[in-house]
Length: 165
Image 1: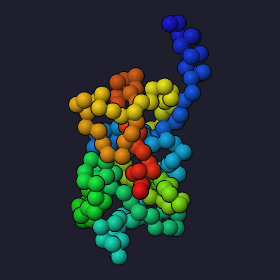
Image 2 (image 1 turned 180 degrees about the vertical axis):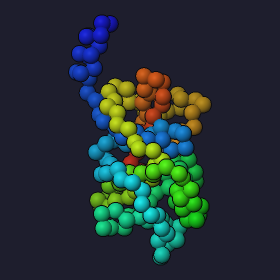
Image 3 (image 1 turned 60 degrees about the vertical axis):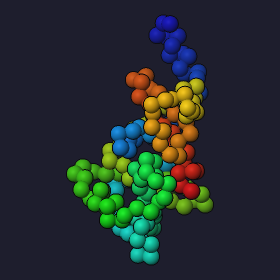
Image 4 (image 1 turned 90 degrees about the horizontal axis):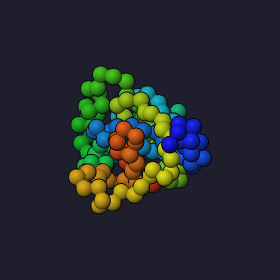
């Protein structure tokens, strides 16, 4: 197909923008409208009333910090050793980022990531459900859809409503 025809087809095809990032070497995406902001990760500290919950400050409010690695690859329980979690983020040399996510009832949570996220416009036709037809892939929790890039990289779309519940 000539380049001009391919570009015209791509322009007509409906797309959606996603913020892409990696956790434990696996690529993930969130719909760009579900991420309120991307900010440098500040101090993370335990909740004095619930030590298993981590918190940080964002725009004069205290928000919960999610352990994405634990939630996506680990046990279904959100209880993790706070000291281990804090050490994991304090020992990094480079700048860390926090995806500020808006959940049910407009509550904010933060998802720390190790590198600045990217933005991708993905044709809706490329997004497919995650099924058993993808053998050999370790499907993370809270993922319902995925897409493959031109470079054959699989990117998992996080089901934010389930992830934050």
